[in-house]
Image 1 (tube, helix red, strand yellow):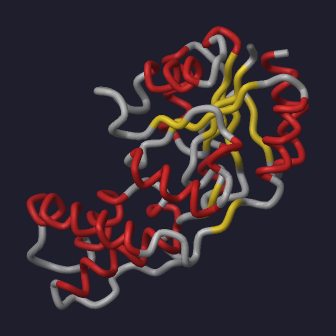
Image 2 (cartoon, one colour):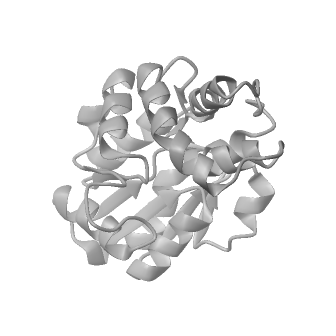
Length: 220
């Protein structure tokens, strides 16, 4: 079966606001106030918790890699406590997923968000059952950009890795697809459009209304 695997953060959903709020909880706990801005720093938020902590600590003196390690589990706990206050699915995302499924494609998720948090978020958004698989950062011994992360998401969705592609928004997603020998489609409607275009993926889309035709062209 032909299969489309989606990244989560920055691809299916804009999770940046809740991620930044969790990071700022860490900074406030250290007496530093809110070091990250939900608009200006949205692109960093979508690269994950450690990236946010590193960026915040780069704006003050006296905090290094050890503090990132100490704060990371605190960030995850804060995020789990308030995971969907600001998060929204991107316009047209679920309509695009439904159309793919109607036309015989399997669909799944491969994310570098911890699996438990990804499951929690997708259930909270009411769309977990729309995807046949969900692979998180800690599901396997490897994570993106290791191709096995993508392959396992395809297999669990009931698909054929040789007839699959990955929809994402970062260099990690592009590199995962290249390592897997499958096409990549990157979305440009999140933060950092020009950065996404510079990644030279197999295709880009400016809205989910374009996805079906791109998928059909790339994997039939």
